[in-house]
Image 1: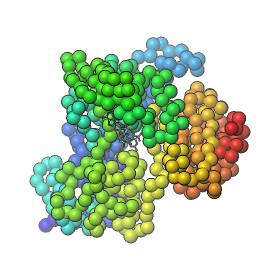
Image 2: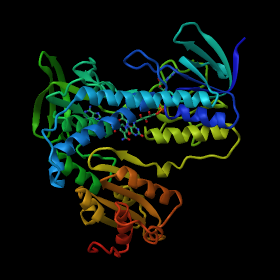
Image 3: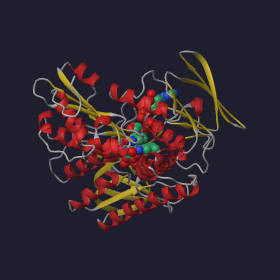
Image 4: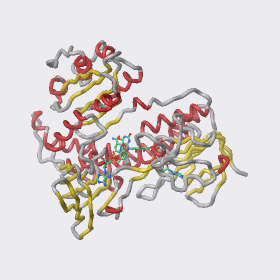
Amino acid sequence: MSRNFDVVVIGAGPAGYVAAIRAAQHGKTVACIDEWKNKDEKNAFGGTCLNAGCIPSKALLESSELFHRAKNDFKKHGIKTGEVELDLATMQKRRASVVRELTGGIASLLKTNKIECLVGHGKLLAGKNVEFTPVSGGVEAIEAKNVILASGSSPIEISIAAFDHHNIVDSWSALEFDHVPDRLGVIGAGAIGLELGSVWSRLGSKVTVLEAMDDFLSMADRDVAKVAAKDFKQQGLDIQLGAKVTATKVTKNGVDVSYDDKNGSQSIEVDKLVVAVGRRPHTDDLFSGDAGIQLDEHGCITVDDECRTHVKGVYAVGDCVRGPMLAHKGSEEGVMAADLIAGEIAEVNYGAIPSVIYTAPEIAWVGKTEVEVKESGRTYKVGSFPFAASGRAKAMEQISGMVKIISSKDDDEILGVHIVGPMAGELIAEAVLAMEFSASTEDIQRTIHAHPSLAEAIHEASLAVDNKALNFPNK
Ligand code: FAD
Ligand code: NAD
């Protein structure tokens, strides 16, 4: 006899495990199936985000930033140290233990919520039946009233630089290097390329990033991208734009990489090459041909605004559907799907999803860039405030960057907030909340911000929108 659940979730990344918890909070019987296996061959819940993405990368970004600051910035603060030395093995051990604690936390959260954790492969069949293949062997048929597909994504592999998992690697392997490569090549100057490039550059690698596009950080506001490009250059990150990789060759010394740019044919020799050219939805063997699920031209599971697939009672959330591949976007979709299953009204505000790149300086934004606002035809006003004029940033010795706010000329509604500078990833939360409440810049102008704080830069930028900045000359 097959087991029966109100909700079966396939995938326990940030989209799936959150959906499972919310469904259980609604009193549903829930099973969550996941097959993730770490490099030590142990299964773990938490998906890409916890095991190979957000969390390990942020652990290393933090450690490498501390190392870099201890070496370069402490003396400015009047702190003398002996020679600052790197102990990469301990740094990597800490990264692994942060991951272990958090993935263990997910497993116990699921159990506390009385969710059946099923370790193995899940496949949706016709009629909302799910075939579960445990890692321990055998096959089990499960009946579900509702199914949430949350199968995530995997790195895009390009034939010109196919992964050999030793010299040419994906982001997961690049998080687990056991020595600092002298010369590191990265293909792709997106979030992964910049974050991982920063980690290894701070730890001593000579990093070259090859980006096919002519524009740097094309998804970000141009003013923000300009500041970031200048700072990365100063830090020694060599970012080559308009660089089309034409060939790679693994040699006994590493990898020879050939590429074309506006100056003609170029080549570099690196010890390791990280390919970070995006991720694609992971839907391998996720559903049978007669299950009724459809994919779009990008391989994403087709869903409507409420993450409903073409099959009644089957939802898909997170990286396997359209929209930005971000953990928090997936989690909110998971919550929405579970709330809808419980008969509640729920929605995701796709216009107010924050993006953060955790480099130094951090880059964060929400809403439209100035170019996008211009293209929309709406008349607008812009205000910005540099961290160089912020007392708190000065005290922190982190004065690079600025806050830029774009609001509409007609009703002053905030349309986009763009930050490059210290703690941008934390500061952006105020802007997201403001946009969620359809705030105007005047609302921020009239909000009291603590002094001295980095958040005052948001306050001043909102004042600057109306030429009322108090601590910096207006336009
Ligand atoms: P995933 O996290 O990929 O989880 C999917 C899970 O489903 C996996 O465990 C997989 O094994 C399982 N699965 C798939 N198919 C099946 C099946 N048929 N049966 C059983 N199990 C299955 N995002 C951010 O928002 N912030 C960041 O700072 C950030 N940093 C990142 C850094 C790196 C290096 C990378 C690679 C990504 C980063 N991301 C970041 C992106 C983020 O990791 C993803 O957006 C997020 O993990 C997507 O969540 P998900 O639940 O949709 O999928
Ligand atoms: P991405 O889409 O952010 O960037 C990929 C970059 O590679 C782009 O700039 C693209 O122009 C370039 N590119 C593509 N093909 C190329 C080629 N053949 N040669 C040279 N350049 C090429 O993808 P990513 O950095 O791999 O990250 C994958 C996903 O993970 C993204 O959706 C990202 O949002 C997410 N992520 C988020 C964070 C974060 O939120 N901080 C961190 C890491 C990853």
